[in-house]
Length: 169
Image (cartoon, rainbow, N blue to C red):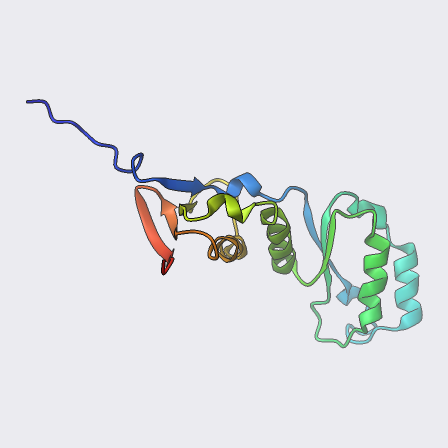
């Protein structure tokens, strides 16, 4: 008698979602204004405005840009507004914060294209391993998107998953 192998994964009804398919494109860079500060601590308006006027903003063409200051200094809000205005129409995305904050915004934007209703009452596996650097922010965002509609959410590979969420229905 020949033994029949049953592919339980194929018959499970699991839908695998690979976040790499939504990987945000474009270079990422951080503009740190600490070197523009007087004595590394104080923003002088005239000096800062001169820097903004002379800075090569076109070098950020089609890039994703985070703007901030790594020095322990008080920087007026208008300084970041001025930088953002110069990057408008040049950079793909501009955020206040570090590269991690930029990455979170890029993933939120990319994953917002998903129609959550397509996954209503589905058993979802969010693929866990791959070649591209998918951030924890991306996994948290897809969980936020799918939790209201999915029957269950798991992390990993269909053959080896970690349960994350199960609907109470």
